[in-house]
Amino acid sequence: MDMDAFFASVEQRDRPELRGRPVIVGGTSRRAVVSTASYEARVYGVRSAMPVFEAERHCPHGVFLPVRMDRYREVSRQVMEVLEGFSPRVEQVSIDEAYLDLSGAERLFGPPETVASTIKQCVLERTGLTCSIGIAPNRFLAKIASDMDKPDGLTWIRPRDVRRVLSALPIRNVPGIGEKTTRQLEACGIVRMGDVEGAPEGTLRRVFGTRWERMRQLSQGLDPTPVIPSSPIKSISREQTLARDTSDLRLLKAKLLVLAEGVGEQARRKGVLGSTVTLKLRRSDFSRMTRSTTLSMPTSSTRTLFDEGVKLLGQVLERPGSFRLIGIGLSHLRRETTNAGQLSLFGEPGSRENPPWEAAEHAMDQIRERFGKDAIIRGRFLKKQDP
Ligand code: TTP
Ligand code: MG
Image (cartoon, rainbow, N blue to C red; front, side):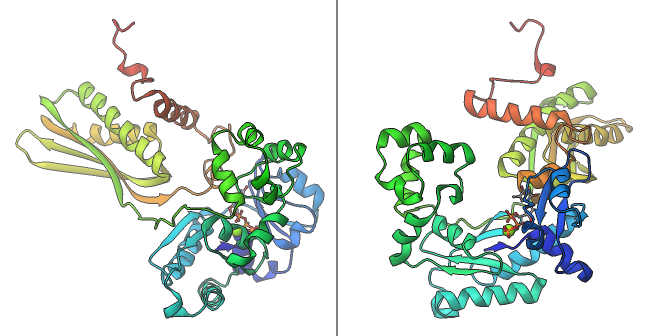
């Protein structure tokens, strides 16, 4: 299930005077890009990720609106609630898109097309918005089906249709195959997804690298990936008992940074952002103490977690005391949306609103993943004698 022109449709629903008009939702700065355009605006060639100034050229009479992410998240939540009424196995994969495993649902809701149109009806009643649904034997095919008849679509790819659909499907429309790969494949005469099946292994290895076997499988209409229900984690935290009780701010801060690093790294890996930071302490007499702060903008950044933790620590240390345990947690989590959504949340890439350490932390995560936990550390942890 994928919502139609999601951000723009929400705006048109909230402001009926915009219905039927070309609506373009995007950033507001000079370098901003289009998040999405209503189908009325797409007629003029306006597309997601196009610079706003270019969209203005294509569609000068368009209505240009800023991104209201909180609003879209709220509507997204409502949509997901509707879906969860149809299956315990719902996997949300972006702000407006989810997979449902409907195996066994026939007994309850009727044949596939009936279930799908009931879902569409319920989404419409709950949110006033249309969506497109693809029904198929697996995820890959369901995604393709959901794209085939947008907007307000309902497409069923039956097992007997699979081969026909894939042999007609242009490579450029295959989810996960980018522009560069498309060009490489086309240069080898591979123009449709069906052509991948019979292509020489060498060609596929060269173009797809390690993904080649999966791509061949997909071209045969096979996709073993299960639908994994999104289990909403409530909070992420780390704590540590200190080697000996201490009231030394420098030591506590050093511990806090290590713990914040763990929390931030896990949040980024899980793709969640949290808006509450909690500092936890246990005094020498074992009494516990927690202090929390709510952020104006949810985060997964180690740096932000650490800074907020230090502020809370400063408040606690106004009263003398010695501590045996320190911990930090992030809660009120929400799923990070698409990259594009996250960028607009933090301003345009490279702007001053987009803190440079976000990029640095992301790079550190990748280095650690590839070369091990100790491959890169913060300068603060380096000792003088370290080579
Ligand atoms: P999509 O589902 O890709 O697009 P859409 O819902 O606007 O239109 P369609 O009918 O084709 O499904 O993305 C969902 C939302 O994610 C979209 O409304 C805005 C946001 N988004 C961006 O911010 N930037 C992007 O580049 C894309 C593709 C989407
Ligand atoms: Mg969509």
